[in-house]
Length: 482
Image (tube, rainbow, N blue to C red; front, side, top):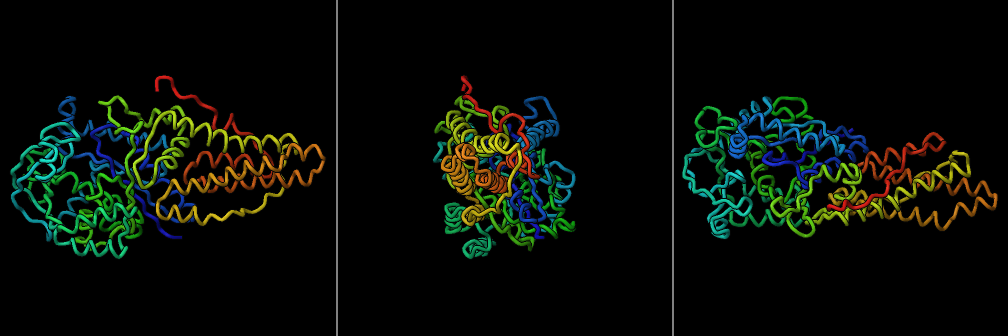
């Protein structure tokens, strides 16, 4: 048995969960479930990032304490994970006492590469991030994400010597010791190294940011929210002394969105180098989801909640669409008509109908008895290869080749015609082949659509057909309001 550690990024709780958060949870869940299928022991961590000036600012608007707001918002992400059947073993919050204690230990361990200096630059509270002069000028002094002016800040902060690790980190990426997938993101971060990495501010004055973890030994400074949030990937394992840390680090893969590439492909690995720790083996970087070809935004009136999709179509249907119809390496698009077409044509007509037809014919012609099911025969090398490089869409394409091949087999063999000839042996063989194909499909779908895989297996086990409660994927219509 091997050990396998997968993480998502931890969403910032300044807004409710969106489709991108849900997709990231599901992608990481596929990897965790696949590892369990192999027999690995899995540690799968998700969670929420809860400190920073933005949270304090929002809490004040709502007349709440920051922790009360954090509790409320974090619960929404935990609830979404539950609705999506995410199999995480841990849910970490950066307000957890254990995280705060271990973050201070990490800061102390990094102090050889931390120094105090004066920062002069541009800042956006909405992003909890600093911006370069070039970025500010390109956007006419207004943050494009929040439509508010950048703040000119001059303050004394602590800095981390990111510049010290640029060459070492570039070499690790180029040699594949720290693999970034897809190549477009690998090339993007390598281009950043060409001009050299600059040291980064890793604290804010407490008078500016009260809601955060105090810098050890300096009560007038608060750890910069992004800096301490990155630490969660090892604090959740009990760094530095806990057995889980010794057992599961380095991470096999960290799943993140493209907007936080720099933090996870430059700053975080440099922190690990400073700590003398191994880098994660893989960093998988997914892209964004647009709505009807446009960036999703409540102000544009095109916001779609993941809960809305799950409540109407179910968790497995959600998982299927966002894993197969949103490109694994590029931006993708969601629309209600495309989702409904995928659901009705692929899940209901192709997969669900194949299960229903096979079970119904066995019940009708064989009194529910199943013949000897043959061993799986299909070559799944391409399916495995796709998952090895996080091409979830291609892996499901290979599964659907088998689904469509099964339907073609049914239409060509015509079991209903064989039944008329009275050739019971041939009929039993054909229907057993159908069941065998469905069980193989269920195994391949297990990481992607665990509930559906279980339902399929439950129909064709122990030599007798067991009915599904209702239909696997009942036909749906697009909501008129959509």
